[in-house]
Length: 159
Image (cartoon, rainbow, N blue to C red; front, side, top):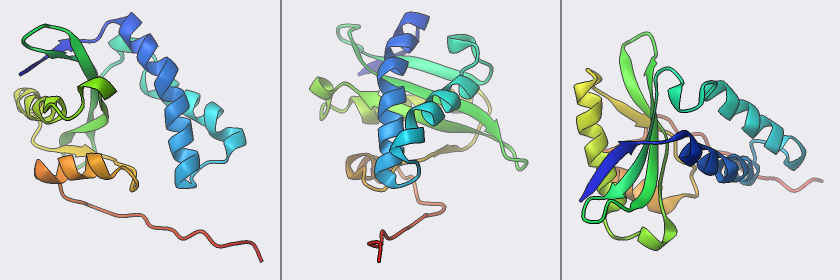
């Protein structure tokens, strides 16, 4: 159903132009960052993760393509990490284009990722999902992902 192809630098640049802004807004929405600091913090995080763009070590950036047409339908980004207990894959982002959602591309990409990760000798995939992203959480749970920790907060009105 899908093919994962290595992302080009121009595809990464287009992705980052949108994603840096969206990531900043997600952190503001989640209450992690203020509006004043969000863009600077977002830019800094992406610069640290991808210092050499698509050639950044241990970072794997893919365009998700529909197998039938080879048309791009989304993207997938994961990194190889090691937490001292072993190496594993960490998904930074998976996006299916709005017009292509609900067609099974996200699930197919996640299943293809499992094969890729196994080939690299990694035996675990982890990810972060914002609590308000219920559609993504449903997909991950359907694929067998389980919460490993949960951060919760409550907003209080200033007295």
